[in-house]
Image 1 (tube, one colour):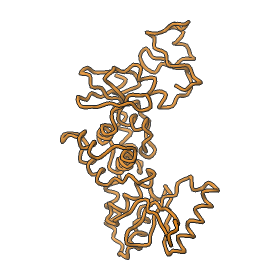
Image 2 (cartoon, helix red, strand yellow):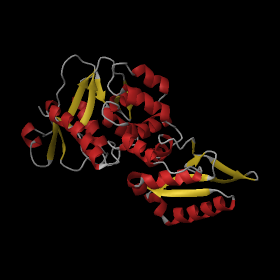
Image 3 (cartoon, helix red, strand yellow):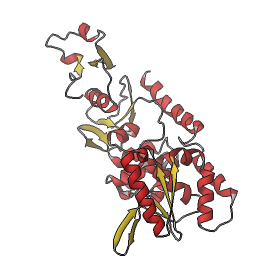
Image 4 (cartoon, helix red, strand yellow):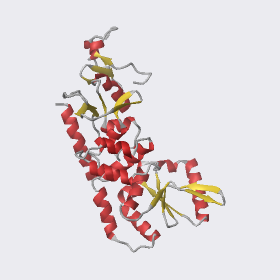
Length: 319
């Protein structure tokens, strides 16, 4: 909880004038059995910190909750879901508002004062429910934060659901990526055979640093980039214009794409890359992309799919 809010209260520890009946009043919110917090808006981190008080000692948060607590890039327009935990205890752990799965092999570590499964085990759990396109940006971010491929391989077992997807995501990952959308833009070029693509290349001229780009279609003068909302900031826009002109003077082509174009107009991005490589248009490239991305959170059907999988956890949590 933040310093400006009263701490979470466990009914078993009530005192100082807080009786169980008082905790059930409107100014208190019940998060789980025997656990109350002030009835104000709480962030997911604050809720997790409170619910951690009622989890067994050999338990912690996993899956999307662990990823969120670590600040990793989450899927696009992530559907609502309960807190997700993991336990090594042999008994079923049931807590209101949190789904706890059992695992005999999970390992735990402290993340900002909250116990979570390790980064490697977090990726293994995420691979059970996420598609390749949603998983690669998280793997990029995880490796960037210090998780290694060897740790992930050690956490994987041959029978793990999603193991093949996670291994492919590891092969496609690049720790230099700086955003979820940049990772997806890179994937659009790589999985459609329009690579190789360099990530975050630095551009120099006469020993002078000129710019750093999101991506470079190696072997061409093309530099695709994803322009998110921060590029609308006045000062950022001025810097972007100066950088674009500097690149143009070097004969380099910067192609900026909005997040909407990355999500909904991949055919334009693919055709631009084909032109940059001097290739004839091949509609099979777009078909390849949608086979990979069709059930990701880039699409309404993909978000509905993920919402359905997360709903199973919610229903299990309230039984």
